[in-house]
Length: 403
Image 1 (tube, rainbow, N blue to C red):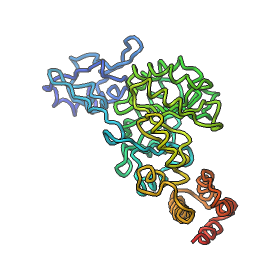
Image 2 (image 1 turned 180 degrees about the vertical axis):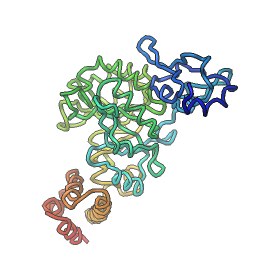
Image 3 (image 1 turned 90 degrees about the horizontal axis):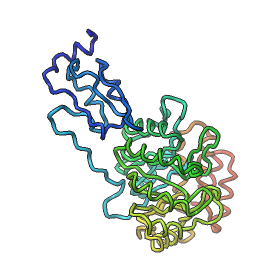
Image 4 (image 1 turned 45 degrees about the vertical axis):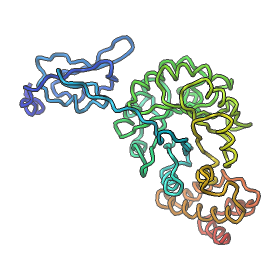
């Protein structure tokens, strides 16, 4: 062949040939695309795909395949294989993490940035990224732009929601290539689509499929791999039957919301289930669900033995909940303190949303989504006025009245 790649690579021919570690290879195909000589292909061994070098005699040792491999599966013959860096959990070692939950429509990049700057959660999550089962590009361009390993120094976990082992693996590899270090599978959303395939909490309806999906994702993810899930689809003890799978597959940690999928958000989160899971697994378990105040969180930690907490609606309603749990802000603030925080918080959110969203209607709708998380009888009149505001000017006028 006399194509451009061959010409550029001729000077490398004295270097050792590539060597492929099939046990480390994820079968992603990046090396296949990188080889200008078309000498690398994918083969199947059992149920696994891996790369093979078709003809070593024609290889010019350019190293393109080595550079493209994200997983250290390709080195040079006679050289020590590159070592995979140890996986570090996305929170400081030995500490009890407080995480900001992924909440669709709420924990966008503006809110995550505000929380990082105000209270610095130990870990933040993206809103879930929907994985396409039909498009070759499994993640949208806008989702790819959100991906990084940290946000302002705080570990960022990329959450995927979708179905089908291959689609999810492709998405995980795309997230990895875009810079993700920590990836989470959403098996908890009670509103997952049920038509094209079971997603979110719907995956618990067919647990037999998880025995293909979970190990495949673990093989594809070099960084940490975690799962956020409900206690079960309609049986709150279902999670206990899945623990051996999670452990044997090498899942790094679990985030448990102890309601069933069919409960949606009704009833109470049963943290007795969290306690049972903590006792039955060696995996770190992060407790999630109905943690709206510092006393709530401290009680859940004390009663369950969980490794940490994930804060959702409670934190969106009161961003200082992180500091209250750390003992750096009043656990039960007085009315005036709550009113002052409300005013400061909503002004800050309004300003940030005006920078990233288009039009007054969208901005106001997004801010009111935050108001929907707030329950405070003492501030009920103010909250009602804010919810009824028809435009930003009227909304700000209510805030001005707070002082």
